[in-house]
Length: 183
Length: 326
Image (tube, rainbow over all chains, first blue to last red; front, side, top):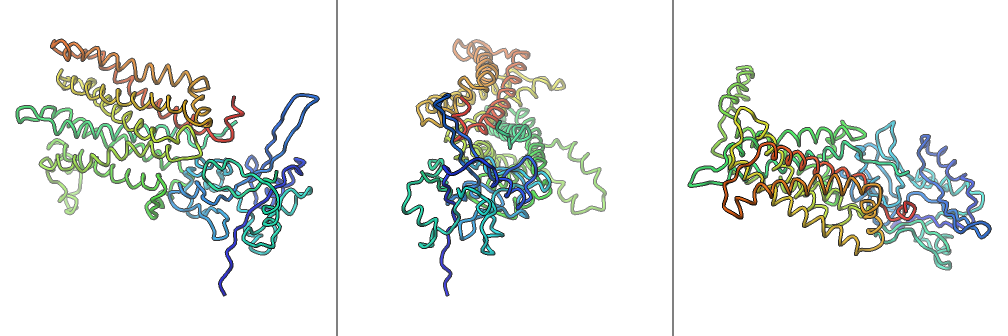
């Protein structure tokens, strides 16, 4: 039986974000991210002056792009894309040249000092492959994050993108980012 | 604050790689020029050939040391990825370094070569078979090396220019800018080396040749830098904001005063004022030793600073962070 094509993506309803940073903490614990580095983070944007003031929170991480520039520039092919769209680093082939970090428009990668290789969000592929949710998605108390397969018409991400307006960040870089922010 | 993923080692490497490309190019060119059937600049050709391998060898070593896992550098050569400028560049760099060493060997004075092989144990017969005079093949080796030297000169720019996420780099002009800067640095380094060589003082026709070469390359470089600035200003907002880094931002002084001024226009002025009387009024060319010393040192400093500015400013530029910088 032919396997159905998959395309994992995250849909983020960032208006629900309360900047509690539970996602960042969960990620750090799940993936043993060293102190000083993060695989996901929350951008804050302030607007206006008191008393007319607003602040927006916007969680971000690796966008698992359709055309990842990090994978394109990698001289050894250590950065690669799975068939389901997850962009990963093969740590055995990474020589630590950091070209991918320079080439990422979202600055989503960090240099792992201990191993001398570059690390990033894996979309918790080790959990997803077992049928679990990524740690950040599972822990988010205000349900900002929706994870799923865009190719599956019955999935929640598919439904959200079909019925809600959304944006992606910096589409002009041509990377085809796969973090969808609901408007 | 933005963290710099690429630091001073990369700057030094980009400079040294370009320097070798320029040295090889100038030396190879000098090898081809003749007057009345006699080589016109044999000493320039020899000096350039003997100097060319070292900067790129040191630069490549620095590049490897800069890796997170330096001992994994061999993986660069167990993969080939045509989409990655660094992958193409590694092969190019390896080939170029090889050619420069062969070319230097072809120019090694007979006595030096014999001295070198005396140190090799006599029982190592296979090694002693390498003790051949390659002098008749100098022109062939130079011709083989030209594309590689140009390639390395361009590649150091393409490495940066191919990164679409950094508007400061992502233009088709950076490659040419780095190439002409590399060629100019090579000519200047050759001039500096020959001026400093006390045993065989530089002759005026040699100074004139190298100064002329340098003027041509500096002018070409200027012809690239000006469109880079003008076109950037006429480009989309992200590029315009990236150029702010050198037009009012933190890299303005180092770009305009130290690179454009001291590293480009001042040496150009010195060299033109040296050459102009002989070129325009038919007067004899004198070639002041101290002026040549100053001009060539400044050109080398400028070449280094160009790479410094591009590596650092380029990493600060991005599509999403620039707004916060202002």
